[in-house]
Image 1 (cartoon, rainbow, N blue to C red):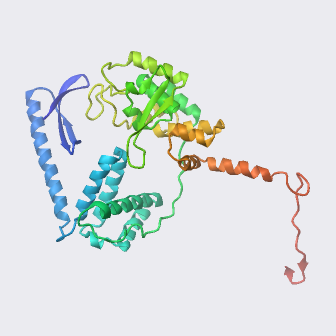
Image 2 (cartoon, rainbow, N blue to C red; image 1 turned 120 degrees about the vertical axis):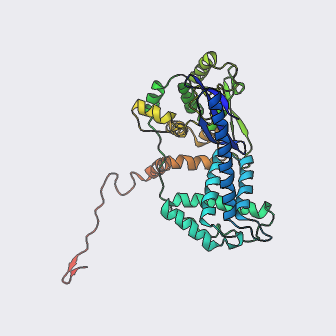
Length: 383
């Protein structure tokens, strides 16, 4: 049913259609009883349209006798991913499964051969990139393995996606903003945005960790912040206590005293009705454009929330902190993850350069250039 919600200072009716507990369509209407009836009619029509689209998709893939349909395999796998993994991981895998089923339209699971898998992944390589093809390959390998383990009626066949070799990739270096650019953005940010930027830098936090952060996770007396993440092998939530710097402690105390919604348990909440499903005091789910706007105002190259986590790692590395300490601050479970992380930021070259310095000064005489011996010319020309 439509809900009456404040939008830009005016009470208006908002129609919403949900599927599996998620908003899939919404539309704003005016105020008053007449607009409420319009919103009800729109909701009913939109529900009917979406149901018809779902039926049409199911009709497109025929049901083979006595075997599992590819669509059912995909939906069952995605349902399990949704229960265990983060929203970002679910969306990534959902996009991959949608692309592949569209490509293999009309095929049965028994017809998904290594040759078909190769055709699909080659198409991704040609139209997107080697990195994109390899990501799809990884996700489809996992989906097929899950089907063999848990899906009744799934064919007992070798994984066709594993048979395809990885594609060559052109590495794209991650952009890490200069520290001065971060502080330019920090200076022009106001209120909650500035507090959030401080938390990203001083805690090396991920976006979801700050969106989930509650005041019960902030211990001012001990100077600690508890961050929770699903970045674990089995998707379980893990909590880590991170010490606060003096600067961050002061910033969070000030935000605690002046926060707009004193009844909210969350540290960062939606303050304007510009977000889908806006409810005052609710935590953020998405903040898609805030960094683009802040970087534009500051006159610096655009960077996102996760780039600030990269910046924290860069600062620590340049200050000579050991990889083991950076691993604890980034909260990676394995040191190899931190090493790959630093390598992706360009610091593997620094380590190689430092190692090669031991070769400096070697040779017959320090600083002497040793000339190459020139070959003598023969009567037939150069030898």
